[in-house]
Length: 312
View 1: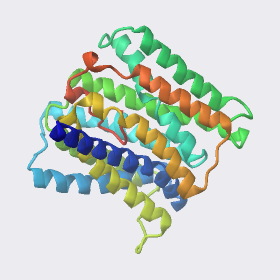
View 2: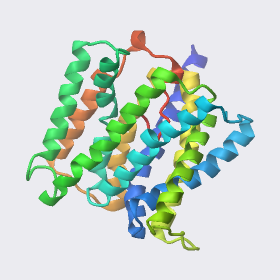
View 3: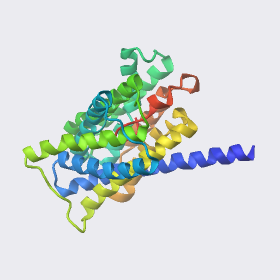
View 4: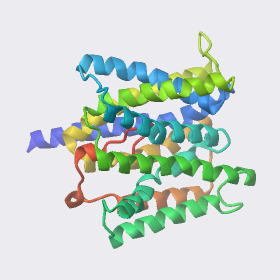
């Protein structure tokens, strides 16, 4: 009995570590925009640094990534849906929006993923989960309401941009659920990161957006490097957690990333929010609680793994 409690407590501590760390990457991303670089350049360096971190982990684990035709197609699709598109829209929107607002909007991933899964026939309608969708939508509407949540009405135009990322993550999650990674998830993520880096580079060079971090790095460059390293390390820890505790328990991280994204934004950036933002956060978290599958609805662990910037 005591051993089971101790094991559960240890897994809960790992889950908390992942949530705290991944939540930190949201305000770090906003600080990174202070480099003045184009969003695509920020995405490139995030991917390049993550590739190095994940490459070292793959080397230690001896999980050689596959180079088959199917694997390469997987890398390309997931690189676009799980990294290039959502990271580009993240850096574009977080430059103009409070990072706490962006953290709340990221939590819409499971609420967008569910109707997509229903449309693809991989999930079924459930009244409880439909109610969760309604609560999530109410939270988004509350944030978008003129003069209620946003400090500047001009920021409203960037809300749809911020919501493109969750939609892309949801598409990616359903793609992975339908197809599977086909190999060890860390090796798959390494392949995706390398592919994303290679796809970014020609676009940056062609548009004249190439930039190199200064040494020693300033505050924005340090934030970019820290965020990329955190993502690579925490992603690997999260995969371990899914294998040990299952995707339903690990899926609780959605609450933690959103909550700590808001808390870190307040602590590091001095952000303050109106009552409407806190109400929107409560609606979003309630929506996640209802949309998340229960134990009897648990999907295969491989299908539950996020292969992008943050948890799906």
